[in-house]
Length: 123
Image 1 (cartoon, one colour):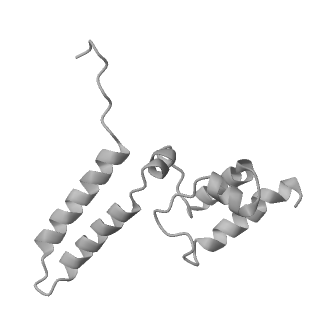
Image 2: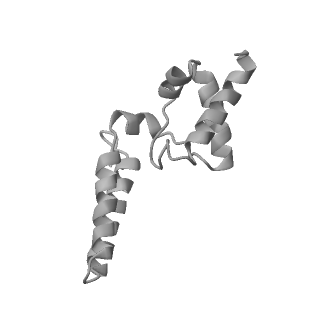
């Protein structure tokens, strides 16, 4: 594959996997995994992801390495299932669903945007 075509190949491959469900919402495509899968370096993967971010198909985040090191997909999916269960309950537990949703969002905010630690000696 010509060097200049590598990012286009990765772009097409990842772009195809999103609408077909092979890459699911919340799944962070870390550069090393697609690079190994497609037999290219991380640079074409990075360029393809930037291009896809420009189209809105993926979201680039400085918090992506942290999520890869501490994957929370299962925890987040469980939270979503609980919110859905409460919302669809026969008695329609809207209050419970609202509370579960609030707790779920608050948990995400705490993980994604941790409070900065005060420097020693400063108050």
